[in-house]
Image (cartoon, rainbow, N blue to C red):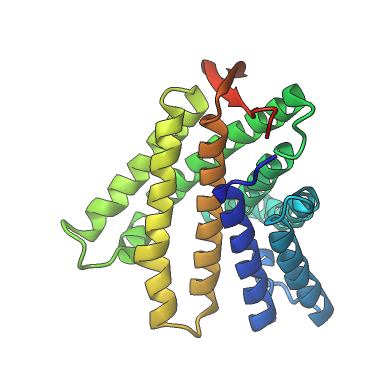
Length: 262
């Protein structure tokens, strides 16, 4: 089993999120509820350990399980918020962003069971479909908050902020369709990864430099990196050599299975 760059990026994002939690003494993933100091330190340390564990072949399975469980808890926090305010899409967006890390962890976990390729392929196929649903949520979030999305685009990038807000929203929608339908899924995943990395370089990293004391900028940077890591993992998954059929919700697609020699 060979670790790939997508795994490393996801682990790095988890460690960054852990550092942010410890530095600001706040668990952003649990909204505005009060956090006992012990809970904050535990969450931050667990993220650091899990993110570091994913970087090493001998501990990657442990790291993936711990990170997946932790962010599943973070995701489930938003379910009552969604039920309470079903028309406020911000809560849906928060759920799917955290759940994307769970999906990335599932992919990493599946990569640790090369002796059961069919089981691994089922896990990866399910995770890939869930990731496609998450991408739909990103498109909808940008669509519902298009003015806010446009405000994040650097003004110096031509032809204009609203142009790029609309373009990236359409790009998310097309990527979701490609992954869910299996048509040009690999190309879409690669372009999605590039776009997410671009968000980090052009938007969130400069925001952190300009306003280093604002926690939200650092959190968004770490979560964006986690999304990019998960998208990168999907690229690794779809680009593997052995091909097996997986049933998708909109027909059939050919997805790939890890090489047993890894």
